[in-house]
Image (cartoon, rainbow, N blue to C red):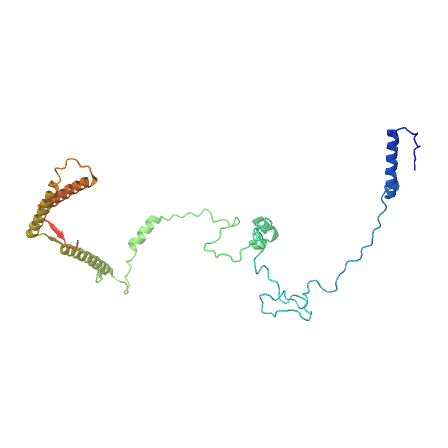
Length: 304
């Protein structure tokens, strides 16, 4: 270690000496803690060998012995695989049998769209069929011909055949000289039929049906008229006079009550106004009823 020289008595230590003392104390502390310049480069790490991964001789899908996880919601006992000899689970797992599928698994994915031709076999085009298998285009059954075939180019027709026959004169002579045709014994003579010149039977049936419909319509109209006559009847003179006398008496009564309020020139309340309007409306209605009863030929509706 560096030791500074002692100072003379009465002299103050300089700043340089103080700094040297501080650095020396720090170096001593670093050497005591194990720090060194040789420790700047880290030592090489020694890699330990990794032991091989443990693999059991039993399959990973084998159910555990005496398990209670496989028998829920089934008819099996409470404990399964007591001897540990089962290879698979005693109750096979059912896909999403409790809470359904995982949320979002029902959505359509863009990779599972229907490809063209996946649902049905694509029909080959005419060119592809001719190229791959021409026998497919051949008809299985030919249609029967009703007319003779068209002559080929090698079949030449007979030419320059001319006749001197006059077909018009020949047809006229054949018709004149022809004997009349005899009518067979079994032929039916329509001029001597039983119903010749008579109206057919089906028309008579139709006429009867139309006449019966007209009769039914007339009966309905007659019933309606009879019903109307039974409902409506003419008013007698006694009834009309009694109604007029009653309406006149009613008019006198209402008019008397109305005259008792005519001296009121100031209608300052709602009750007075309403009472006056009621009397005037009743008088007008009674007058209209008396005017109607004064007419002649009055009918009464008995149903009303």
